[in-house]
Amino acid sequence: MAVPASPLTLVLGDEELLASRAVTEVLDAARSLDPDVEVRERAGAELLPGELAELLSPSLFGGPKVLVVRGGQDVRKDAAAALLASVPDLDAQASLVVTHLGGNKGRALAEGLRKAGARVMPAAKITRPRERVEFVRNEFRRLGDRPTEEVAEALLAAVGTDLRELVAACSQLVADTGGGVDAATVARYYRGRAEGSGFAVADAVMVGDVGGALEALRWALQTGVDPVPIADALADGVRSVARVAAAGRGSAHQLASGLGLPPWKIERAQRQARGWTATGLVDAMRAAEWCNGAVKGGAEDRGYALEKTVFAVAAARASGGE
Image 1 (tube, rainbow, N blue to C red):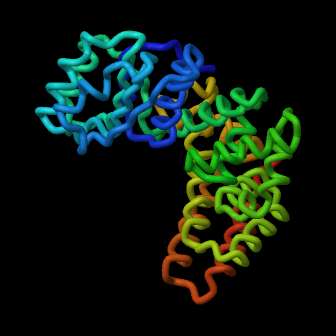
Image 2: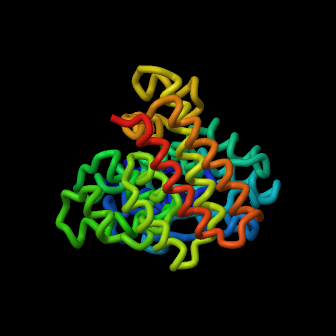
């Protein structure tokens, strides 16, 4: 959905995809009011004070004009002063969009635009796991689907955290399925990538699925995945379940701040903790510690060390399982 038209917009943040989308939304809003709107673009470092009057003046035929300045943090002081001085003259016929990375460089321009009443569109990088899950869910919603958190987690595990790849994956899944994407669909489409990750190995063994863990492990090794991150994922899986189990009962959101883990990870660990005893988790942590040392230099056959650990962790679970 296009954002309302505004004569002054500041796109603030260092995530290229989000910044690009924000600019596109502003231009779409302007074109919805006048399809013939003239769009001019300038790199911040190349902007000259003397050209602003021409860049922001009405077009030759009297139509509206939008100036997009990309990289506002690179605008020189004299050009920044001229840019701020032009703000009072902006209207429906002459509007301005400035993108800015959001750091200290060129901060005076960003603050000046804020004070001048710019609509601020955030475009900061998404760094928190929970935010990534919400980004994926929102991307599906943009395409008319309404996935669960489990679907978003599965796609992140399969594709990674690059936003452009995630956007492309969401679009492909919805286009091919017509909507209603579930975790099984994601697993089917990205079988090699999802099952080839260390986290897939850890997730399987923590719920006692030895066959699934070994299949994922062998696929990962055959496709060239380094054994070290797989060992790290196994250790992380055991530690997460141990920490969540020790924290006792409570909702994921209640436990999140105390454990320093995102709610979705706590919920997954709570599910995986079923069937584990305290003694079993201690044994599993010892196995994961041994594996870490073996894979990082103490074993001649690192693949065998990982397989041995899968069996050891599964045995630890079964020793106190239901």
